[in-house]
Image (cartoon, rainbow, N blue to C red):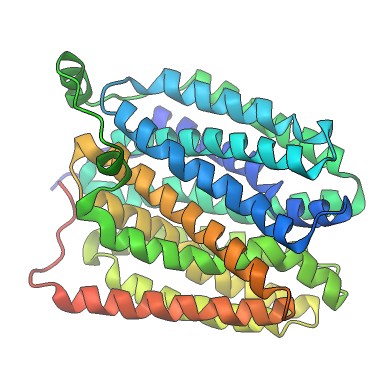
Length: 394
């Protein structure tokens, strides 16, 4: 059977634009906790800088998910990219922790908006028969942005200034906005049909896609471990006297990129289960290597393992979530997927922020690592419930 074309110009432009969006945002993420500490923030406020953001992103997604059922994509995408750019440039304007928390909350609203519409636009462009492969490549823009940009951000923050970090982040946001503006987007016919008879809004229905709840739960638990890394790895590096923290992110990105073509095709042929089981074990091992790191070589090994494990799991989880729903509700399912990421990271920051008062950062990594074993167990349970061979969505 002839495969539908995947690598179209809109798909390539969307991947590049989304990459710059995630790089712009992720450059700031690991540096905000030490920055908050440097201006007098407490350990609780360090956790809140992540938690308030995640809460805002989760709150907005049901509304944008419902909006995507009746609105064309491009204007929504440009609004999200523009809002992210504006809010990024606001961080250097104050050193008062309270106002930074307010900016962070609004930034979370914009992030929830943008990630939902961008991911839904990808679902619209990717042929359903190649959803695992297509969303795997789109997910690569997410994963590489989440992994590569922090290393650059950490380098800039440690060697220059927070203000320079913000302005370079804003420059990447401008590139993303320009790329989005010249990209042609596909809007499903069902969306135009819904405009004639708009569906009733229900916060619960727009927040949760019932058919996709199980992989969304797995995603929450999976991102808990990443939340520990992104919130505390710079602080951990400072405690250990390691100057190569960025190497963790760099080799993370390399392994996530190298493994993506293989894992995407495997998903389309065999489904998500065995892939996620293996990757969750690799991620567990990576967290213990990181927790024991006392040299840059240890950081490289931990980063490579985490890229192969966590970096391969995330696009597989997104494709799993999408594969269980219909095209017209893909925006809601996609929003739930990204909310699951933010909920996992936000919960991690809040819970570990409390535990951090009593233990060191290495212990935080060890504690959060066990969530990857829970991911493995839940995936095994779902695999055993399957009664029919995997079929890629049509």
